[in-house]
Amino acid sequence: MDKITRLTSERGVVIFSKSTCCLCYAVNVLFQELGVSPVVYDIDQDPEGREMEKAIIRMGCNAPVPAVFINGKLIGSTNEVMSLHLSGSLTPMLKPYQNLSTS
Image 1: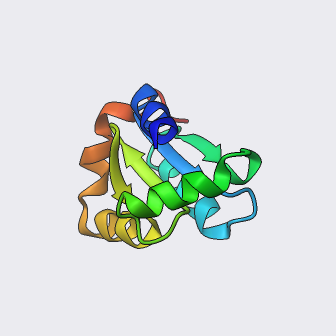
Image 2 (image 1 turned 60 degrees about the horizontal axis):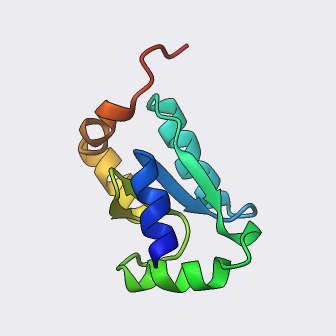
Image 3 (image 1 turned 90 degrees about the vertical axis):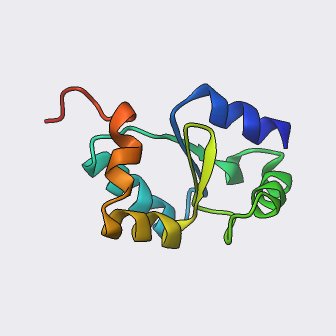
C-alpha cells in the first residue's frame, strides 16, 4: 500500500501499532530503552486501518501489529524484533537512529 510505503520512507524507525495492543507497547518501550524514538502509527485510529493491516500482512509480516520498519524495510513483528534483540543484531540496525543524548 502506498500509504505504508510513504510513512515508512519518511522516518527511520516506524512502528505500526494499535492503541490497545500490549505487545505494541512493549516493542515501543524496548526501542525507547535502546535510545530510539520511533514514529508510532496507530492504525486503529486511521479510517484506512483495516486496509493497512491487510497490506502489512501481504508484505510478509506474520501479524499486522506491531509491524516494525527500519530504514523503510519491514523487520517484522514482536517475534522478529525480540529475536534480533536477543541475538545482538537489533542495536546495530538502530545505531543511525539512536538519540545523541539519552538520559
